[in-house]
Length: 465
Ligand SMILES: *Cc1c(COP(=O)(O)O)cnc(C)c1O
Image (cartoon, rainbow, N blue to C red):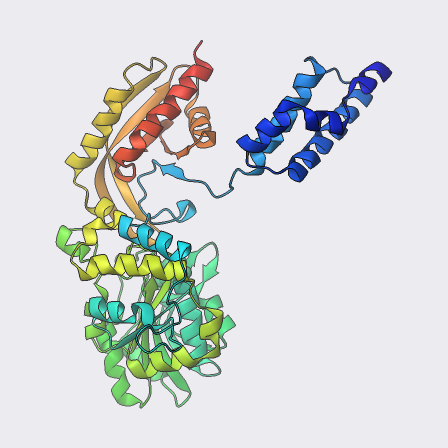
């Protein structure tokens, strides 16, 4: 053991080795970082030797292998691209929507350069970041005014706090939803300081329930779009229009609708779901609406608030506006996304495009994949009809007909195959259904197909025989 310990090279000797420079270049690490990795490895090797464990390899190559392993991991990002083969278009765990080319280009441009984020180019004076996308939002929704905060949950909190704190806010029991990740509308309301006044029952709320709940202390009626579940059967709820009509009973009553995933493209025209476009909702005369930037809108994470100017102006001046303010890269992405709607090019937005892909278009993608994997002998492939989900808590009842490939591997269970695919580079996330791995091609682009083929090829190389 003493001999082996004596043979461990000192740090300065390793620093002179040609691999020291090579690894530094390869993994973009400077001398100090690489030296501390060397120390870490040498300590570990000494401990290994002292504990009596045997090192099978030549000591030097063992040490350099260990150094390289750590160097490689050093700069590997933890936020990585993933191939979404689940068919769920707005997968919240997988980052919801992909951005459009236009949105991505704008982000890069704004990230690379200084920008007029809070600078008025015409007057040369200080500007407001609220102005960046306000006109565009007004154009695509027909709202009098608009602003943007961090996400829609923040918008809900903000609006309740600004207009409902210490006052009564009426909401139907049927709309006290949990948004996901255990975030509940009722808890957000509580945090905002608004006094929750629940009316109706889980399945039925009538207009008179609201009327009877109105008091001098009522500031707002909140309607929450129950986007992530659907109660069917014996149900009754009150339309936005009817809630707006309550304003005649009380001056200054604010009617606010949290739309969840507000849509700017009319999916009902394509026969998908029943989501009303934001413009239609605003036409009822509702005072304020809010919706997500990264659900069916297909943009970056953001919470869009639109409605009557008198209220939006108050929100812009509120202290919380600063707390919830949006970053320039999100503004850039949001502007690029909204512009597509303004130009009638919603189909340039990946989330919208993937919702509308015909079953033939999905079949074509799956077929291209099948042609590319014929040489892989370890798997059996079967083209099957399938159904894609929208996801993101949106349109839970909607199933979009799709085409998938059902895969089986000779020497791997479906669970093991799914694990291998997920742990590969890039990571491929699949759906397991009836003991089979399912690849739904609605959420896999042409550009991802070669990478997907490669993922299977690597598994075959590892597990063949
Ligand atoms: C998704 C959702 C939210 C939260 O929106 P985020 O943008 O994810 O913060 C709020 N309300 C409803 C009804 C939702 O569906």
